[in-house]
Amino acid sequence: MNPRIIAVCVLFRLYLSSSAQKNYLLESKPEKDQRMEWWREARFGMFIHWGLYAIPAGEWKDKTTHAEWIRTTAQIPLKEYDQFVPQFNPDQFNAKAWVQMAKDAGMKYITITSKHHDGFCLWDSKETDFDVMSTPFKRDILKELATACREIGGIRLCFYHSIMDWHHPDYNERRNWEKDRPVAGTDRKRYIAYMKRQLKELVTNYGDIGVFWFDGEWEGFWKHEDGVDLYNYLRGLKPDVIINNRVDKGRGGMAGMTTAGGYAGDFGTPEQEIPETGLPGVDWESCMTMNNNWGYNKADQQFKSTKDLIQKLVDIASKGGNFLLNIGPKADGSFPQESIDRLKAIGDWMKVNGESIYGTNASPFEHTSWGRVTQKTAGNKTYLYLHVFDWPKDGVLHLEGIGNKPQYVYQLWNKEKLPFIANSNSLMVQLTGPSPDENDAVMVLEYWEKPLVYKAPVISTYSADFILATDAVISLPAGENRTEIRYTTDGSDPVANSPLYTSKLNITQSSTVKAASFYKGQLVSGVVSKSFKK
Ligand code: JFZ
Image (cartoon, rainbow, N blue to C red; front, side):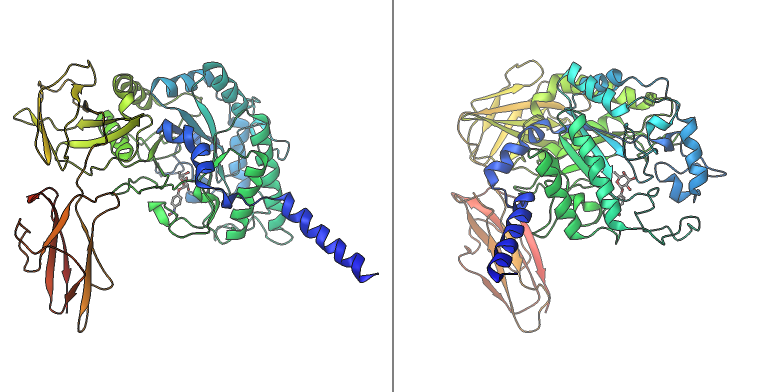
């Protein structure tokens, strides 16, 4: 063939392959901000782990500690596990009741297991018989939820979808105890194609899906390239969909955050934990169980208290994250009563205090002695919501590190104004006790200008253990430009006439460096310290 024709063919092929799949990882910040808007506003969602595993309810032979992992944790052969299919008949299932409970709890989205690791599908999939249509129930659960979300309004439907699959032969990793599922003749590419066709069903036929929440990405089966490809595939089908970071291999353990560049995924997924501090500019969602299991376990009575759950939601919002709180419905399709009670109580709190959660950003305040602070900006007003977990004995609430005076201070629940005194670096609010809500009572500081918050400096170094000498660099967090840093190297707390920090310190002896922010000669922040060892 003519080399010029070959060249044209090659170029055309390249053109086709590049236009067939756009690289959505290259999206701009404004584009991402727009796509994430509803999710950042929402702050609170319901996780639902439901499937065949609800039938054994955590119990197998002499143990009652299983849940959604039961096929693996109890080492159940596939043929035996398949026997749950003819038993699945949740006659109490009522999609509207579920969606209404989420909405009444103040949640804004529901993330349900379209498929968990066991491979069973809660929807009518054309791709497999291992789905709800093979059960006596024969109703498309996801379709009913999608309809209920549309009819009730205010709740986005989202899907948790496991990459790992213990049922499909072409997902060709095996548990070491599995002797009944040969890997000969399997094909990982075929599995990925299966998964993509299923995801296409889910993204096409169930309304405006908000999030795809992948999981089970950690096995060797799944490669970084697969993650990027799947991310781009789904965004190609629905450009505004949001996808968690477990689609790719960048997640760092249970802390859940993606710590390096180049990985796909729109938000981090801390599991059963809350990051220590907010992470500026990073989207994340902590998922948590109400008791100790994701799937229904009838022996598990260790439910977190309503107070604990509300304070976790507040803690997460104060750090700029979302809270995805799990329900493990029973085999009959009802929610455990303990979960219903807690959802209701959280909802009662949210009806009064939701404003202090929805649309808030990470606040500049970390833990205070009495609770947390959430923050929201609206036009040129900024609201700081003071969440009082522990009511001060003397009825005076202190907020340290704030440098300007709010326009108003009031109680969120009745808008009643409160007297306050603003000093140059702190605020004192006179509360009217006792607390109206032992879970969390909220006071609002309304600012008509940006609140001036003094932050403590940060001490960093190349190495705190050194041989001859090392450097200590002390800096103020971004945006903190009014204060000056004073420091000590003898272990004492810095005071107004301690040395002023101007450039990096050369450390030649074992010592402790302490530093703090000062404004007009006054200490305005906490003291930070770092030890150096020769
Ligand atoms: C995963 C699932 O295995 C679990 O069943 C549940 O769905 C949860 C939300 O997500 O749990 C994990 C995931 C990863 C690790 C541990 C538990 N990990 O990497 O250690």
